[in-house]
Length: 134
Image 1: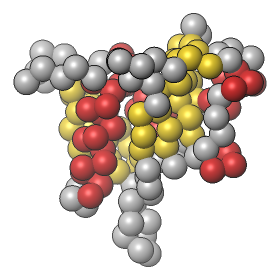
Image 2 (image 1 turned 90 degrees about the vertical axis):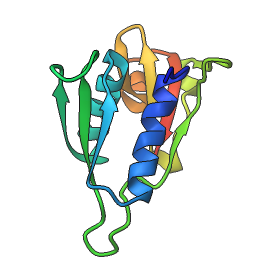
Image 3 (image 1 turned 180 degrees about the vertical axis):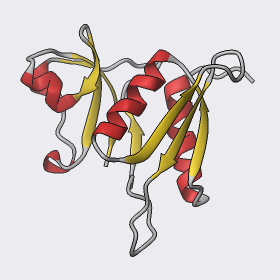
Image 4 (image 1 turned 90 degrees about the horizontal axis):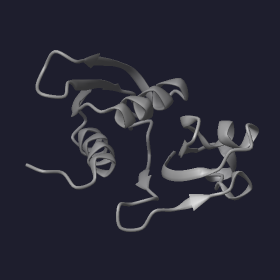
């Protein structure tokens, strides 16, 4: 199966795994997906992750999803793609959106690499706004 938008596929696999209440989700690996995974981990949206480069053609990312211990609801309430292959969204550092008054996370691909929107704003770098998470 050929995926035309690998980042949308990445986000959809996480959404589907959470809806099915899976603990772990496996995703085909790429540099962009690894960077997204590290940001989600650093911001506390996923429990842990593991990169396995020996499996398959490109390797696999295994994500351990985080759930609320009391309500058993997923910690990630919403994942959304902003910039798509058919319509890229580039923004200056001052225009990067704040998600739920800063409680959410915007992920931006800049000339300095993939980073959170807050970090891009602090470094005063704009770029392609990939997705949001909250």
